[in-house]
Image (tube, rainbow, N blue to C red; front, side):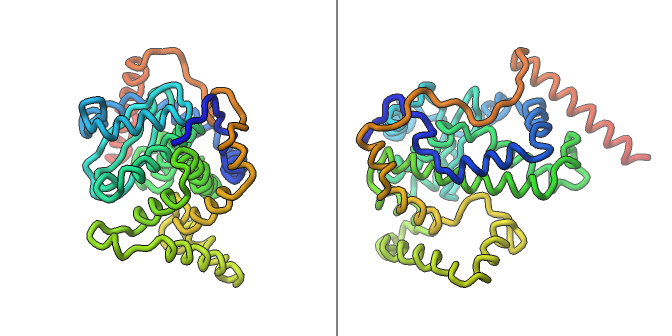
Length: 321
């Protein structure tokens, strides 16, 4: 496994990720939502929940996973080691969150389905989100989506600011952000087939029938999916599926599409230069800048709870009139 001392996130960040974030940040209402998010959703409650409901990985708790995790942190030159939690959930999924206190959550479904090197690819992918400063935007995207769809619930005055265009921009950015993190996984693993096999197994892999799943067939499926664009109507259908007009809005790009983008990058000069040690250096900064006051976390949490209680009481009074 390779290490990249001093590597900056921009060295491997996908240009579509960068463009989508710039579009998102420029839309009316984004700055307001960023301030509201920081105001109402401190990181500490999330950390408390994870500490109380999952297993925190450490030297004597999932020690094999912990060792792999620390190696990935080193390989991507992440100066502050995030906390890692294992959640009891059969769905093969993982996510990252937090900026001041970043952490990663891996479902047990991942551990049961994947090999050790594939688990390492998942860890590197999630660390890519932290390295690129994605986590605050990811949490905001989830929050905005919930605020936009909630009916008769507390939205903290956010609902009226969530336009369809802003919501679509959040989802578009989330999909493109995954492409950067797939690159982070490839940098750490240095084996394209392993990363693609990980994607295939998470998409529809089976423990009992793993011997009947073949990577080359999945790659062929990816190529056939790209070929669908030769028919303009199929491009329209893809757009409608991603935007939620057909089915649910997609927060991640389809796995076969991620395979396509990663295969392109694996043969690029940019990737080869990074492997040779020629890349942008210096610590990466978070991708989202929002104002945070200097009060203690306890003060912030207390005010948030007081504000939440006032909002609930106001809604109750309105409903009884």
